[in-house]
Image (cartoon, rainbow, N blue to C red):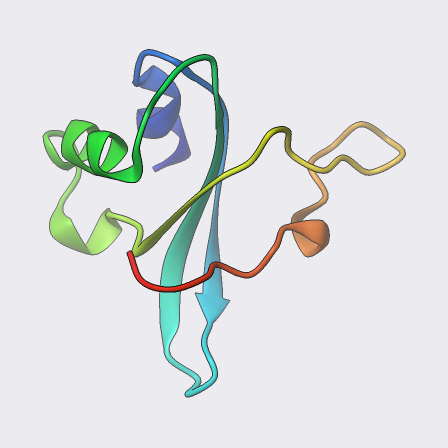
Length: 86
């Protein structure tokens, strides 16, 4: 999923995690940074051409930059919980 997101023009970085909501339901959440103006709908449309429906993230969160650990790797624990719906 991450590699498909990175193929979309304008996406610099992408991370996809499985998140649990308050009810314990699991959902895919994509975090990304862009070079331009990309909306969640644009990303969803772009990756839905290549991926089956169950692999499309329910949430898309655009960040200014992805949080990093002291080692320079993406700090998945520091990523914010998604707000609202897809």
